[in-house]
Amino acid sequence: MSTQTSTIATAILNAASDINQLIERAFDDFEWASIEERREIMHVFSSVALQHQAAVSKFAHAVDNAPTSRRDNAARELDYHSTTELVQHELGVGKTLADGYVRLGRLLQTREYPALTAAVEQGTVSAQQATVIVRLLDEWQSTCSREFILQADASAVRMAKTKDGTTPSKVDALARALTAWRIRKNPEEAELNADEQWENRKATVWRRRDGSVSVNAVLPATVGAAIKQFLDANASPKSRYGSPAEIDERTRPQKMADAFATAFGVAAKSGESCTQGGEAPTLTVTVPIEEMRRYAEGAPSLATVGHTQELIPVAEAAHLVCEGAIQVAAVDKHGAVLELGRSQRLFSRSQRRALNEMYPECALGGCTIPAVWCESHHVTWWSAGGNTDLDNGVNLCNYHHHEVHLGNLHVARDHQQNRWKVTRAIRR
Image (cartoon, rainbow, N blue to C red):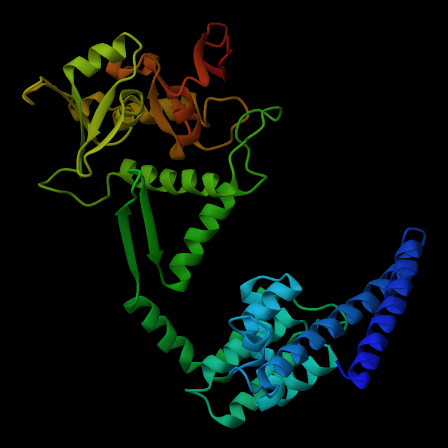
């Protein structure tokens, strides 16, 4: 290391030490500061952090452009595969952010987006904000004029700050705002975009290695927004499942999966879905007679799901047959059908209406899922000989219906109110 380089490095370390001491003092004062003083400390610290991010981008630019005689890149000369890897490991950031710093470093060299370049150099936008802006402007380069790109560049930097001029815009909100700005400038794009979304709609369903099923869909904006709103509403922390004292331990993705299943259940009960051979699509679950005997004895037992040929516990099959057009076929060891469940095991529409009057919400106290989204459960299970009678029926949401069949919830008669009551099962 040359004397000059060593002197500069020492000066940087000393300056960083001084800054850290000042920051520590500011943090010590934060506890006793007024709201206005806290706001000032916050804005100053944010400015320092943004300046640091700007320095990282300049560092990535320096690495990318430093001359080297031994390798094709200074990062390789320093035993890294790329500048991204160097930034990622030396600064301890994720690959996405490291890629962003490298792209911003190239921006400082090419200066193709002047307003954003200046904002990065001055540290007035965050690296995350700048990365989003660059990504969108890069995408638009092939379809927009240079004049339009420069307008978008200037507008994006203005959008990166909220109206008070100090609080940074959130990255997602910034991306939406800049995209909306483009559409307002070219409203015909909205129509073309909607047509393209409709043409590109698709849904795929595939079996995973463990037998579970993955669903992936790409939907037009309005349809997707409606579905997202439904799932978000049902997965919200404010959604009540069970009594206020009961803790819903499901994760948000689990809640959304249950809401997704509920939506299909409601559609199936509507009677307006498509038909196959003149009847509603019917799934057959096959249970060998010896497995039925094992199940009756309380031993682990298996059934086979038609269409996918997956093996599932007979207890899970018992949950499935409570709801929807699902047939259970009992077969002998040669596969010959001995008994075939028919659709009349399901509660009729008139019975459902009566159950909905008796149980306008899920029967577990405090669960506010409405009856129209619930499933009609046989208290004495249909697979155990229970009748499809009103006195043997109760409304349960998909989640709590499953919990009953898992044995986590218990259904008992409340003789005072002459109705079924669902409670948490007592573990011995």
